[in-house]
Length: 156
Image 1 (tube, rainbow, N blue to C red):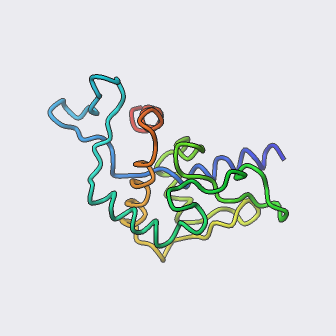
Image 2 (cartoon, helix red, strand yellow):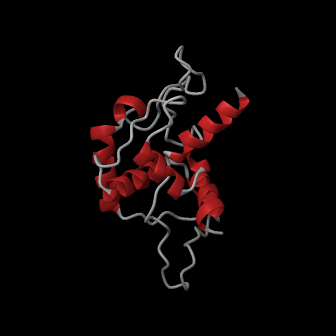
């Protein structure tokens, strides 16, 4: 059960990060922009990409993950069939614990059938659509969560 929970946690979180959205290099030699007041990494997302991602998410993901990525409060508790419900994608869960690559792979391939019911989106969504959705999901995270994610995965 512990291994299954760890595996699920990893896979579920995989679903929820993005790509192509690193902070803009700006005039500081490719380094991310830091907010002078908070000391946190600033998101300099392409607003058009965020809007595209939201549209793709609304058309394909809300039935399971909720209108705003909030999902269900009992996402950590397996259903009677032993599969876990869809986790939240906002700051309340652990999507931000995974790299962009892992998240994209989960979206493309879905979750293992013994763990969850997320379908594979490979061949249904384009790579650009998946990238856009991941950026939109990252836009849901608090500044503190995004900063932690960036420092763990992008800033290494």
